[in-house]
Image 1 (cartoon, one colour):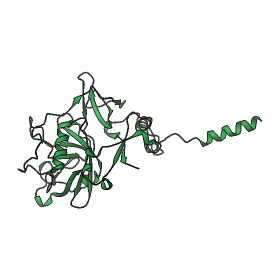
Image 2 (spheres, one colour):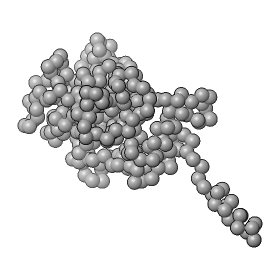
Image 3 (tube, one colour):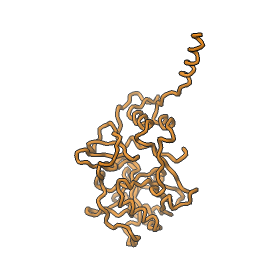
Image 4 (cartoon, helix red, strand yellow):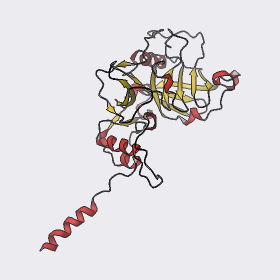
Length: 293
């Protein structure tokens, strides 16, 4: 009788799934309820004339006036005929109408406030748990990587690979959102709190990072014939339901996110000899995936 009771228990133990060993394992083992879908109004879809696509998630929680401007510009077709005119190696790819005199659509705030940081109050932050070179602390909130200062009570989005910011002139200019750039190199964190970060590329960053580099100062193309034409820029909410790109991010408060972050800090994949025991904020990009996989 004892053997009959023990054998089923052993069978249950052997059937238990192995714990995640890699960050990819943690994502694969996550539950659907641990993911949050990105609103269609917050997805900026940039189609290049070449047929390639870049999708940007906007961050109204951190730069509400700039993001509202971008949404109005998209609805008005402001970027019709715009180009990517600057690609600086290991730095940024920048696009827009390149200081043209194109009139602004109604409702666009020409000089938005300097939305370089926001109040820390109201944000629930999951700490990174590793030191940050550019801020007293760093972590994750609302699906975004953030740096924050508990003493000053401020928090800001960070310039990581794929982050999207607003081009501007010298202060007090804050940029109205018509000229945008994406970081395509090593995280330019020195730009934090100096420029409004309004989002991140969630799909198609390779279509920016692989572009020919500009040969003029700051990576501008010398000839306008080298500019990369943009076919259209629209919000996903402006597209037919069946054609909309849809994405979701892993909630930072979920158990799978905690496992994923722990494994990002302590890589135990077969390739690694020694785990780092920590991670840089920009080397722990919040997992984002197309809805449905």
